[in-house]
Image (tube, rainbow, N blue to C red; front, top):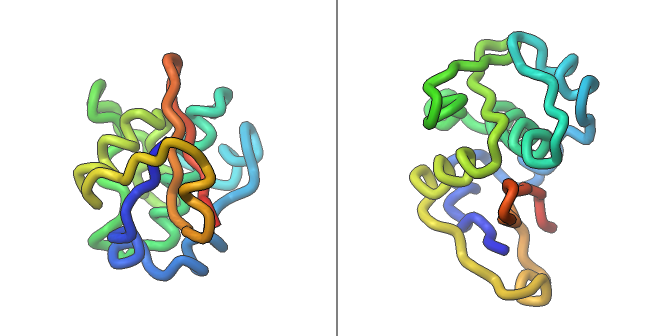
Length: 133
């Protein structure tokens, strides 16, 4: 488990705004909300990456919005507002590492008590993002 460092607050606005912009919708509701060419996210990996993309785009100033959809394929997926949306948690984590610096690895959730941030779980078949507060 790793959480992105606190540099996020300097690039993506304050925590309260960031948390308010986290969509609770998933699947087809999330796709409808974002519009554009966003594909239907059907896995937890994709849903969490699309949610975090939407949150970053809604919270950041124009200089810090998402800058890609897929680093591996070069595909460009944009929402109805013209913002890039990533549907791969692993790719989004790489972007966050490059944008904010590597997150801090935590061996267990107890180490994150009392902290807030973006938390990422990695597994053999993908990853998953959540906001931690």
